[in-house]
Length: 201
Image (cartoon, rainbow, N blue to C red):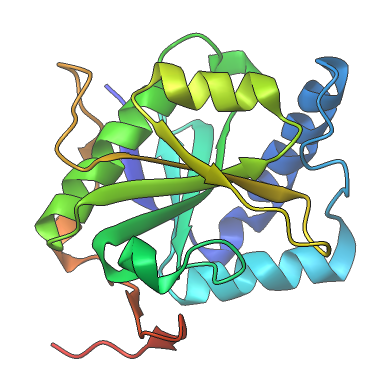
């Protein structure tokens, strides 16, 4: 049984290690995804911000070993437009699985979990963006039910392959066990301009 739980500041060193491992593995496969390696104070500050805002989770096993991580965030307006009805999407970022847990289907379980949370929030889609050159990663997501929406190519970004899958799509009988009620997790709302809005109970 795998568990998904909110990350804390104490987990940042483990998150950095997952990112470094993912960068090296992607490079070994000939992909330039995440070739602008994140390190040092800037990367740590970004993790702190995501954790403080309740947007990053860890996936652990029965012995509480960290096997992966995933984050969510507001709509990226470099890619998604008003025509995409941005409020209907759950925007997934930084899905990483340890190489020690490769092949166990954890990425697919995380996507099922994201779809369930999206549905609870009344959202229709789980959405991602990949680097335009990361063909292998794009095929991976297509194999897990994502459809290619289109590819955007802003000059200042390397990402831009946009994919989405219905929030209702569940591919596994097994499910990640939430450490706490997913309904209580803080949603990230977006305005028409794509800015994150405060949420109120």
